[in-house]
Image 1 (spheres, helix red, strand yellow):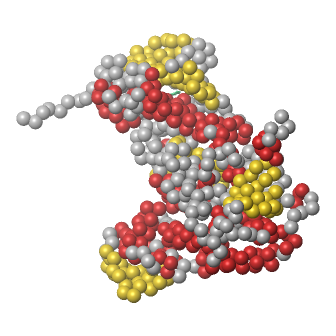
Image 2 (image 1 turned 120 degrees about the horizontal axis):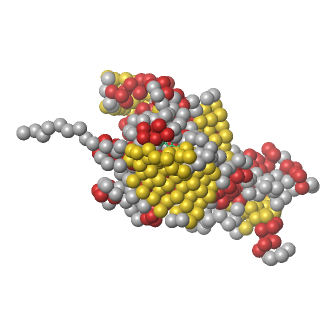
Length: 597
Ligand code: ADP
Ligand code: MG
């Protein structure tokens, strides 16, 4: 006999819903902080005990909840944030599903106290029993709301087993608090654990406060090694901090992206950022960033997943391009420029600090001994050319301080590896191979950009079986494929014939190549794969072509290299993301000799 159908109790159905949103104490902290922010609070106190399993309590000074609505606030699908479909399509608040409080209340002992008015006469509810009926009682409370969550998962032992140590849970809570403090700089946020103040984020009202807030999240080193970016295009705005390529990490753990103030994890965004760094980051390293995208809420669907971590953009291709371009441009501007007055926030000058951690990749100098050879002779010619172009007067030290260029003038070469130069602030040390490699690479890219990509006809055209989706992508993007150096023809609904591929990729497997490119088109609306391959090849070529160690340069040759670096995009790092130069100011030098103490 099949079993009969039963109506689940309110609590059980809320517990089922809680399974999706309330995974651990950090999820509670996120939902409750978001509620406080949605209520317009600018002062929030968060008390946590036992990593959040014993207690999470949030008190805010927001607009509060009407006493007649208190009971409703604990019901599922009850919200003050949307009322109809139009609202849902343009959600401007962090919450809108009306699920969090009901879910949390079903798996913990929750008390909600609130007061909409000045004074101390608030009201309180606690949900108890299977039907979660709540009693409303008077309780003293100033204007604002307090949510107290005790004994998380006391009634769902299976869930409780998945909780980790107090320390691990606390780390996750800290991560959430950090993110919220970044995305809402105007909120004064105090975070206590087991009765001790862990963090106090004061409101970031000025640029200085903001960089302090950034520093408290990422460390002071980041601020000194980051570039601030602020770009707008039509209805889109992207701003925030991106780390210099030389400030990369082995983990992708310091990457914060916010869409209209909501923290998100999104494949499209990750891809766009990765692309923008592709050229300057050593393989396997991850950039650090805290970026904010602002756009019309109707252009983004936030109702993708109950945790609201994912979003869907209506114009995904445009967003991808915009993010890529903004970051790419900001990174391209990273070239040597030393501002003697503000050594800290010099942005591009970040790579110049000596106390930053050692460069993250193995330096290939010294291994192998290229010695003078064909490539070097070529180089000597190159600098000869440069000398005649620039005119030797520009390469000689200037008479007054104002005319000294950022990287100064060469004074010597050290061990055939480093150029030592003197600028207004002190000493500059340049890794000449790394620097020259970047200059050569950028030059080669410019040259291939202006000539376009050459097609290489295949001896025997090959037929490639594709899915119907891939085939229609090939048809739709035919012009772009041609520009990338492909010659293809539709053969049927599920196959194409490839007659030519990009010349410089003639060693690759054409079938895999076209498939990869089409999948880029399907996923991101564009493909930078060919460019990436091309750049990889150019980068290798540049590395081989660059001045090797142990080559003596004359002073004018060294000066020519310094001037070239100042003029080259991304001149601050070599193609592998290593810094090309470093600075030691007179003050730092004095420090070494305990002068002036
Ligand atoms: P949602 O945030 O999706 O609306 P919640 O279950 O998180 O759903 O909250 C339900 C409702 O309770 C909210 O819509 C809001 O009206 C009210 N609320 C919750 N927390 C607060 C708070 N801190 N201040 C004021 N109102 C709140
Ligand atoms: Mg909410």
